[in-house]
Length: 105
Image (cartoon, rainbow, N blue to C red; front, side):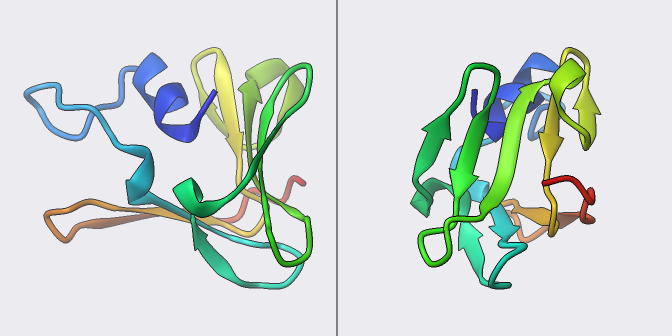
């Protein structure tokens, strides 16, 4: 599951008319090396319960998405997003939504 999929499953949309969020709008900071990345640029690793976005520089987990029962972080109905060093969404209209670090990882 991707970040945009978890948000869509929770009913979170980009606009009132129901437009979806797009994965390329999301960015995360690596808790290991501090670099920031657009999530679509990161390799993914699938475990039994979650998807992990992995830092190409140091192999730390930048973002993890999975069942709420198995992750700390931003709870989105049945799923959760763990952003140990924070993440943000940059909408094409210029709005930026920041999600502070969850402290997981």
